Figure 1 (cartoon, rainbow, N blue to C red):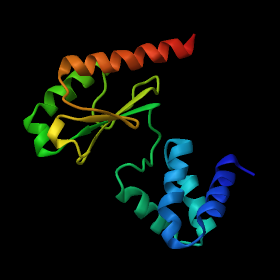
Figure 2 (figure 1 turned 90 degrees about the vertical axis):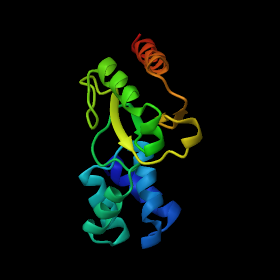
Figure 3 (figure 1 turned 30 degrees about the vertical axis):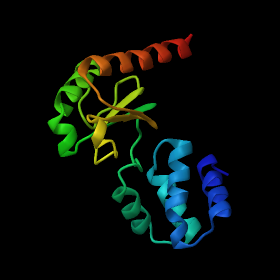
Length: 160
């Protein structure tokens, strides 16, 4: 059995095979696989006896359910008015300059993806971003460069 099919079967065994169990199963696949491939969405539809269009529609509705391959580190920049007023564009430019990618892109080495997302819930400490599940607030271009440098250093150490 394909490893993704096995994962989906195990998640369905764990959560159940009803329509209301779709979201935890989608989240479980993203947690393990880092994104929802077309194959995984079709397998989920088959396992839950749902139309594939319903699975795809649910997956694409939620901003934290990626349906294309992402980098090892997914950087999400908050795009609310509060973050914008407090310097989100300078943060974005610092990231784009350092990683040489734009919003929606992944670095050629597959390590970083850059996305904008709706409110992260840290308006009181704007601008804010997530790197995978790690929250960073009160950002400045300098602080962002330090944060990214630590991830780049960690990446180099893992390669050794």
